[in-house]
Amino acid sequence: MRELEKQMQHVCVVGLNWGDEGKGKIVDVLASDADAVVRYQGGANAGHTVYIGEVRHVLHHLPMGVLHEGILAVLGNGMVLEPAKLLEEVESLPEEAVSRIRISDRAHVVLPHHAAVEKLREQSAAHPIGTTLRGIGPAYQDKFGRDGIRMGDIMTPGFIEDVLPGKLRERTQRLGIPGEGIDEAIQICNRLKERLESQVTDTRQLLHKLHQQGKKLLFEGAQGCMLDIDFGTYPFVTSSSPSFLGLGPGTGFSPRKIDHVVGVTKAYCTRVGEGPFPSEIHGEEAEALREAGGEFGTTTGRPRRVGWLDIPALRFAVELNDLDSFALTKADVLDGWETIPVVTAYRLDGEELGQFPDSLTDLEGLEPVIEQWPGWSQVDEVSMRPFIDRLMQATGIPVSILSTGRRRDEVCVFEPFRAEGELA
Ligand code: GDP
Image (cartoon, rainbow, N blue to C red; front, side, top):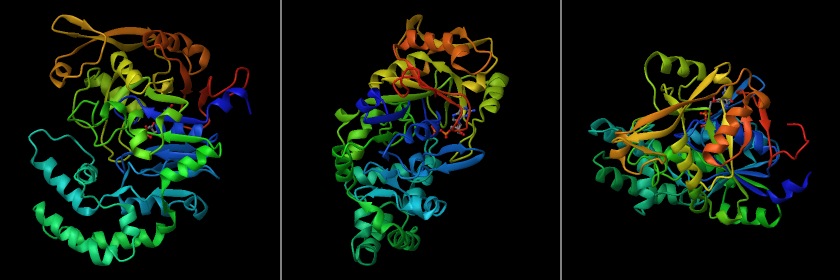
């Protein structure tokens, strides 16, 4: 199609805030140009919503690419899969789409006792994290404790009948919830095997082959990099690496082969669950922004905490993800505002900081420094240019995609995803 595109074989989309940035929509926009869309971490704790026309599609495990004919939807080894939820998603799709799903035999499964133990921990914790209670954290604990159950195990003849019951009895005993969810787990694993056995494969090898054939891969991080297990606001984080850094271990595909990393951020910020959020706002202003942006969780329905765009946090995200460009979403939510409040620095003990601090104690004492940036009278490239230029000056990174509404066609695409002169 064009010179630029040839150099852009593989792209990765990551969330730059605390999740819910609208990654689903951006992946959906870019997927039309990809051969496979790949998820590399997390599980059903993610929730993507995309509108095609007026039809709403919600996916939890599956990447948005599955809604595009002819594109492979790959669930990488770094994911933890909840069988009942995955089957529910699969049943909502036409058989043609199901045939394009590929699931890593190394991905781990989340079973009912994982959710049970997470509920107990959150209920009794002095400082609950505010997790989705789906058992994601405990499933990752089993993985790193070298005690997990993988998709490949489930598909091995005799495993469900002969090995799984004993493993689950021993585990639930150890966790202090003897027998919890064992029958349910066996039943759901049998259904999973029956329905998806032919979709389970060595996805590392598959991705390598696709690369060699010159096919285009689009990788999708779930949640957001401020929730990264290592680099997020620990311990108020998710149990995996949603940043670009998670791509390698989560797929077995070398990050050196990725040509472009796009980071998705809203024109403001949100966070679900507990933990530091330096640009957070409260009261009537927050209520109005939450309502205008429809900021209620796709997976949990929880109202999201809201705040202003946070430049020090974005600078941190730019470095962490080795970012090439921004996808700026939800511009329409602030449509008509004369000026847009943006946090450009923090004050800590009388000193001004331009960087996002590492320490949780420092994060809690931050006072945001707010500047008013130029607003836009309508959501188009021209009206938004002063804001976009300001963002580039503050971070050194250009905007490549501008999302101006929730529908697939409400988008402006710039270089490198559009060659000069080509209409979006
Ligand atoms: P994700 O987890 O990052 O994919 O985010 P979600 O899908 O949970 O949340 C994003 C929400 O914002 C969804 O309801 C999308 O339909 C919606 N959305 C995405 N982009 C835009 C946009 O530019 N404008 C508006 N108004 N909504 C958007």
